[in-house]
Picture (cartoon, rainbow, N blue to C red):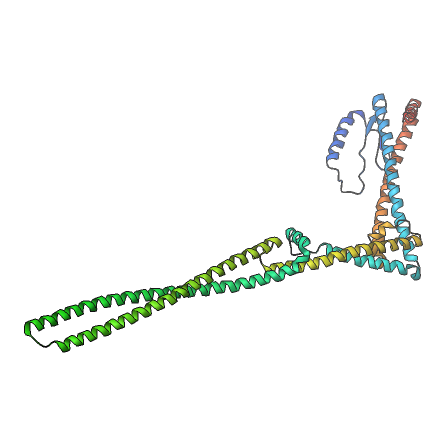
Length: 403
């Protein structure tokens, strides 16, 4: 004697012959592999049980009972959720039916919550153009940043001037060194000319003396002329040499002065460069322009952070007012409206919330009906088994008592 169980209420089928049982079970096993789980309701597969076999019968009864318990538990959980959704819908009805004067402060609080939340979200996702290291430096040295921005600008401007002075001094030094080389070259030329002229005058004197001894010619005029010429040339050479030495001394002094100024300027340049590097390293920036930009961004961020703290305080205050007004209207589940205050302000949003709740409630109702159907089918199957034999009824009673 065999019975077949269906997941949904449907007309009874005739018992399946024993020789077809194995083939039919294989057929059901194949059907399990191709069942469409995308449906909202999935029908339970048929089960064939030989009630004459006590072990199979007891196992079958146990499974029926467990199925009833599971369906009952599911119904209990779903009904709890269903009651919650229904409570939400009743709250919406209370809010909608409230008089305008009763809803005035509620709407004002909800509008403020919507605006504050929107502004808070906007500020939360704001990106600031400074990194964590720069922020830490700004936090630590905030009282000195404005002064250091000004100082760094001054150092960078001074750096430009110092570089210009270094280039000028270097150019002046090269000119003076060139003048020294020219003086040395002129002095060398004078020495060469003096040697050549000295040699020529000596040869000319020897020639005149030779003529005087050999030819007894009066050489007074040529001798005087030669001596006068030698004196003039010697005087020119001496004067030119003296002028060159004077120029050399002056040029040497100028060159030493230029070198001393260049050295002093280099010292200033090195110290100024190191001061700039220190300030840039201190604030994790590359130059004064970046420091000024980061400081401006930091001040803007601080104002926005302060605004966030103020908004958080105001938001808490408006949340309390909203909860009080909802409680005054008799709303049961007040806290959920803190996160959907826009539905209180915008009727269109409230319609969407109501529609969503109705959809949820419909799905829950369908699920309750489905599990109730399963319980009815399983209970019906147990009743049929009880009617088959007093022995079967006794076994069912004993199982119920044990559980």
